[in-house]
Structures are given as C-alpha cells and as structure tokens.
Length: 151
Ligand code: GTP
Ligand code: MG
Image (cartoon, rainbow, N blue to C red; front, side, top):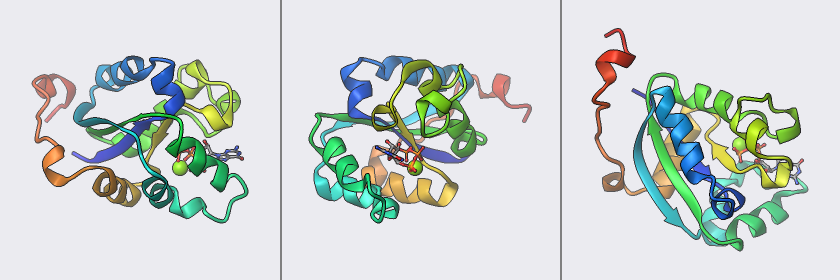
C-alpha cells in the first residue's frame, strides 16, 4: 500500500498532541512504519518547503520550523493514505477545517496548524526520502489487515 510523510510540527510537540495524532491515524487503519523526533535545521526545512519559497510567509515558516524545538517525523502506510491523510488533517487554515479533522479539532492559527501531510504521492516519496533513510522505514504488515481490507 501507499505511504505518506506526516510531521507533528513544533506546536503539536510542545502541546503534547503527538499521541493523539498517531492514535487517529492508527485507529483509522493506517500503519506507522517510520517515526523519529528531530530538530530540523534551516536547510532541511527549506528543502521540505521548497515549493513555497516565493510566498511571503516562507521566511517566517522556515524560521519557525527550524528554531522552535523538535518535530515528530512519521511515515504512515495504507490504502489511500496520502489523500485521506490530508482529509484527516483538514485544510491549511484551522478555522476553515471541519470539526473531526486534526486541525479542526486541535488548532486555531494557520502558522500553528500542528501537522504536515504530503500533498500527493510524488511529494510523499520525495519527503520520505528527505526525512528518512531507507532503513529507517520499516516493513510492517498490519496484523489486522485481513479485517481492514477485503483482500
Ligand atoms: P503543510 O501540510 O504544512 O504543507 O500545509 P498545507 O499543505 O495545508 O499548506 P501549504 O503547503 O500551502 O503551506 C505550508 C504551511 O505554510 C502551512 O501549513 C502553514 O503553516 C503555512 N502557511 C500557508 N499559508 C500561509 C499563510 O497564508 N500565512 C501564514 N502565516 N502561513 C501560511
Ligand atoms: Mg503543503
């Protein structure tokens, strides 16, 4: 099944929301196959948000993400996890995110929106490669997969 990259942002780590976020993904049926707490430097964050470098908030975003303490980098696996992971996260602005989504339930400000998720299968592959070495991503089959997938 496909994989996506997700990251609990510094505000989510400081607010101790990591477990809540992992729990939502796992309860859905997705498998956590990569996990680490890291304090990214400016170079890593700049590469991660490279597509946004022309935006007015880019500099502040890079500074925030690289100077606010650790983030929790994660790889989740499962059917439709890239797109449905984004549905579970909500839209960029937490005040426009539906209740029931991570940002809708847990966040208020666009600059403190708690979690990142890859916005496509190609970015997902790039981001997993950027944040994880191949051997840091496990080959795990959900022991309940026969009860989650028809076949
Ligand atoms: P990510 O999952 O973090 O990539 O969020 P996203 O895909 O919902 O939004 P996008 O990739 O467009 O922007 C990346 C991040 O930049 C957002 O999550 C916000 O934290 C921040 N951001 C986006 N738009 C704005 C904005 O208009 N103002 C500010 N201050 N920050 C913004
Ligand atoms: Mg994005």
